[in-house]
Image (cartoon, rainbow, N blue to C red):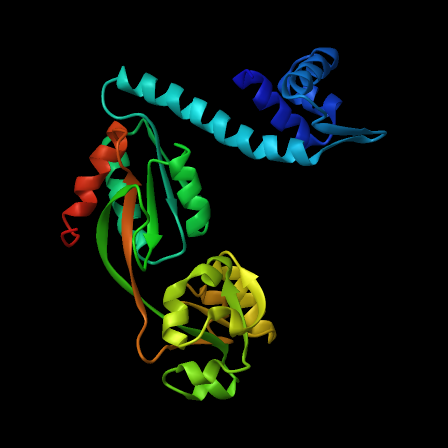
Length: 295
């Protein structure tokens, strides 16, 4: 598989039409169609369903699209990093992944300071939940990742940031539980709740509850907080999450109440063990480490 072919395949899937994709890529439609047929032959089966008005990926095609995006991104980053190594100062791309946490502000300040000294450096931020960010770092698409604990993922070196999150419940402001200062496990009995998808595998919450998290009345799952807050505001249920992630637009309708006994998680910046960091990532760490506790 050639990088160019994977890039063109992704363009076709996103355009939903070979002719439109060919025009955007500035190649002929027959040449693009031939690339697609050769790719299908190489991979042993159809990747696209051809219809009168365009194309859509098969199940195998959708799988290839996910892998193609990572492969193309890694190839582009490798090119940029090698060019950067031959130039004066830092250039190329500094790629950082992060979930939703106010602790990212420290990373943002450090990245801004580094960029001010190296105007040819590009900073690329990818947002997502822990599972998505972990996968991207391990694939080599991201240099660094900001995770919210508890615990540590294997295969990483890390730097703990000076920020601790409290876990609790986001509730509608008119909910009877909103009158309470804290939320205990008994308050979650039969309560309609929204959980992050990772939370079903999170033993730490089961330990706090005193029972398996699967016994909760989970009415919805979410990846990131914005849409979860919209669902809370609509009355669907209460969201179990960390503090500090509620967008200001929901401040009048949604309140946060911490758990009691307290349940807390720290925040840490992590990178893969073994492979050397890029020059930009290496330069960023001291700017963050100076204000962080020892790991």
